[in-house]
Length: 194
View: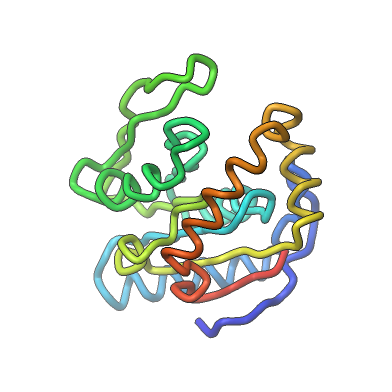
């Protein structure tokens, strides 16, 4: 799929992000399914971007369209300093032989139960850290989302409130370090502005 920066506007998602229109979701799903069918591999979609870009909204829409299971990296990050660890878990655990992840319990700030994923079913992985040099070769479709900083702040804080506002700079520094090291936008099949 060619790289571009179309606007993915449409109805608002629960988190306040502009939801993707049906034709965009259908086109992305068809592209992912076509790659998986042609290669004879599992259908894997990676949706990445900084906080507040609409990853969850797009990821959920794609999973519904594809009949895929979805892994939200918010469930995988081991705390506020866990972006890099979750990115590694995408490769070694979620898409690896273990086929699952250790869920993080945000209420207790402790690891929780193992969440298995079916290695035979299509999967959408969404979250900052989903698209790395290690995960890119495992994917049928790689999507990077972008939005301006003010819009991202409004969406993220509107969704997660004061708890995220206190951690915004800490998390943003991890996002910046991940982006500098992995260059996910360059690994993406498509770049979308939300």
